[in-house]
Structures are given as C-alpha cells and as structure tokens.
Length: 488
Length: 127
Image 1 (cartoon, rainbow over the protein chains, first blue to last red):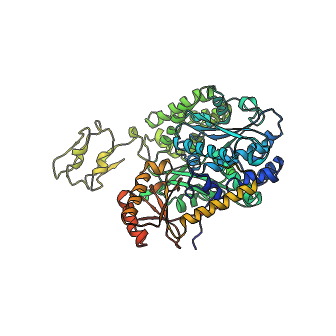
Image 2: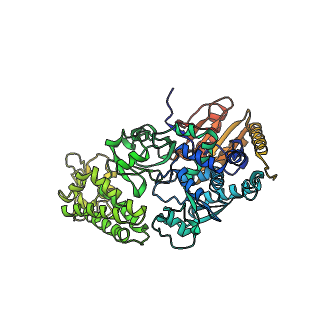
Image 3: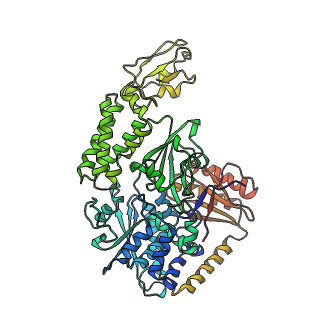
C-alpha cells in the first residue's frame, strides 16, 4: 500500500464538516477537550500537558507554546487576555484562512482552554478585514458557542468565564508581529515595541497576554484529547507534530498540505507537490515568506523543522512555500520581496525604514544592468547591519531573501554585474530576443503579433528583430510555432 | 438552545449529533462540496447548484449535499468529494457546471469515476 505523506491534525476537520454547524463539531468530539479541562484538570495540568507535547508557535517564531502559557499563568493580574493572531499577511500563505473557514470551532475551543489555563476571561481574535468569509464563519461559531454555554459565564456549569471578541486588521504586514498587533488592537498605529517586556508579562492594555497563531490553537484540542505523548511522538526531536504549508508558485499541485515535521523538502516538492509544471527544472523554494530564505536543490534531503530551516538561513515562518523553477531570476526574486517589505515597513526604526529602500535600490540597479561588484559587497554588508540593528522580527529578517539567495546563487548575481547577463532571461535590460535563421520559415506570424512592429521580413524569408525598438515582451516567442525565437 | 451544564450533557449532544448525521447519510450518496473563499471564487456554488439540479432532474432521492470548508486541492478547484454507499470517498476536481452534471450521471448513477480524480495523500487524525 502506498504510504500517505500527509498527516492532518490542525486541519483534521477542514473539508469534512460543515463549518457553520456546531453539531458537526460536536460529532467530532468538539469542546470535549474544554469540558475535560474544566472538570478534571487544574490550569497547571493543562499548561504542563501543552509543555510536554512540545508544541511550538506555528506563526513563525517557533516559541514553545506551553512556556508562553506558563509565563502568562504565573503573572498575577486583575485581567489577562488570550489573543489569536489571524493576521495572515505573507504573500502566498493561506493556512489560517483555511482553518478559520473550515473549522472555526477548534480555534474558539482552544482559546477558551488557553483562557482557563492562564486565568484569562477575555479573548480577542485579530483577523484581517480582507477575510470576510472567515470572519462570518468565526462569528457564527462564537455565537453558537455562547448559546450552548460554551462561552460566556459559568461555562459548562463551572465557575469559569470566558468570551471572545473580534478585532479587524487593515492588512498591514507588520501587524502580524505580536507587539505591533497589540498596539493596533489598542487603537494605536501598528508599530512594534522592544521586547522585553514580553506580552506574556505586559501585553494588551499592559496586562499579561498570550498571543498564539490560528494553527497553534487548532492543534490544542487534539493534543488534549489524544494526549501530549501522542503528539510528541510525531515530528523531530525539537519540533513536534505537524506543520501546514501553502504550496504555491511554480508547482503542479498548488494547495494546502499538512505534513509531519521532519519530512524532507524533496518529499514535499516532488511527491506531494508533483514537481514543477511543464517539465521545468526545480530551482529553489522560499519558506517563511519575506522573512525567510531560499532553499535550493541541494537542500532536498533536509528534514523540515524549525531548527534545520534556521540553520539553512531561512525560517519556518507561518508556512508559505513559494516554489521557483529554472525561469526564475533570483536577483529579481529577492527584489520582489524587498519591494514588499519597503511598502510594509512601519517606519519606526531607521534600519528597516531606510535599509529596505536602499537594499531595494541596489537590487533594482543590478537587475537594470547598472550594478557593480562593489554593489554586491554593499548589499551583503547592509543586509548584515539591518539584521543586527532593526527593532522587530520584520526588520531583522527582511534581509534573509537577499542573504540566502546571495549564498546559494552568487554566480547569478555575478553574471548580472560582471557579464551583464541574466541567466534566467528575466531581467529585460540584460537579455535580448533573437530569431534563429536556421529555424525561421518566414511565416510572418511574429511580425503580425509584435505590439511595437519591430519584426521585419518578407514571407518565406528569415525575419529580423530590431533590438533597439523591441520591448522584450515575449509575445513573439509564445506565438512562434517553430521554436525559432529565443531569449539570449 | 439548552445550555450544556456538564460533560455528561456534552457527551449526550455528541452522541445525538452523531446519530443525527448517521441517519442523514446512511445508505445515501454523500456529496461534500469544498466551499471556502477559494472554492466559492472558482465556482463551487455553481457546481453545487448544477449537481443539485441534475439530481432532482434525474429523480434521485438518496443524495445528500454537504457544504464544507477547504479540501486543500487548490490546483483543482472547484472540488467535490463523493461517497457512494459502501465505497471509499472519491474526490473530483476541475469541475464546471457541465462536468458537474455529467458527474451525477457517470459516478452517482453508474459508478464510473470519470473526469479529474484527485488522489488522496493524507491520513486524517480523528479524535
């Protein structure tokens, strides 16, 4: 029998139950983890169980969830908060949306469990306003849970009280960073602040606050029902359980996958993802979104977990995986992420605000064919300075796409500045489109499709491109039936 | 709605829910339609409507349609999972109104899995 590569814990109910029916969730032993916790577990026992499971934050940082809960539980305060970070902003990532739209009750239940464990009575879900369906289903779940006495006062007949509100994010990437998220929830500008104090000590309204990601919460009921030992038996030594990834980019089976930690990159790309479409060569995969780095074909045997990815100059991130094939220019790719960060930096600290702009300018220069070898040194130096000096995780990790692509694809950077060539033929200033005389039959198709009329030639005679006029749109390459037009 | 007062009440609700779901789907053809934002955007609602309409036209009484969240196969949305009585569930993808209608004829009536069948490559943890 074929071995199944995927294991679905966080997405166990997605696609199986009606997300708008609390009854469907009951049938999957919904809210039983909460009921068990309230009737036969002390808050300390819950914290211990989560610690023992080895669950680490699925939002990217990978901080042990149980330790976070323990800190918040130990801090005495008149009010504490449980916050669910549903501000999913990585380009190409949609794990949290799928969980919230497919199984919202699992998050509601887990937040209540967390509230009981740390002694909080209030929960807030910080969710992107761009996720209207997720918001609608989550609201319905919260209302239904209230009606059944699973939220509100005297939950399940106990003295425990807990309720959940929603706060909408306006789509700023930086607000996924927990301190900026807290500021945004308080009605201030979404700007991070220096840690410590960590939110578990002083967070939302300066009260002890646990901020966990959607996927982290979705794992909690499963851990409590099946036990910490079961959960910690899955995965690698330091990364337990599974991770949900959003496979996107140049890959056949674009989609959501949930795999046990320790699966190799090769298994994900080729066995689950089906490789690159059109028989193209796999080149690299960006994990961790704009904060992560590129893993290459040399890394196909690397078991995916938090520590291995960091050792490779990338990071787990929230789980976006953008696959690139041979037609991707790595300089252009790094430029894309810097462009994104340049827009998304909050502007509070200089390394991030000015650094992202300067990094972008250098990369842009290189793709325009105006880069020099000195630019490469400057790029590296500036990246390291930003890494060491930026205020928050967004800034510190922003140079990762540059550093990791320079690490693995230095020859490509050099080709741009030394040979004035873009090996992937992406940077238009560094490539030319030519007609191969030996293949051209003079069908005139290319000259008719050319938007700038730069192709000349009589019927049944070899055609020629006027390279001074050509805008390198590639329309002729797609139209040519004889493969006579190429990028060089 | 009655508030649940203790764990026994919750377990009773679970058993009732399971019985109710069983009664609804027992000996029936079960069609689950992937209707998260992505499935809806790619035409999942139209596929659902087309299949419901076709089932009605063909006079099939024993087909149950269920709306679910994301089935994770973005590469082949809209997708549906069909479970014939006593058979393993099969996932069909890349549907449109026309292929959804023929699916009723081909698979629900004749049991022939024609069209884009998506191999299932996961183990689901059931609590």
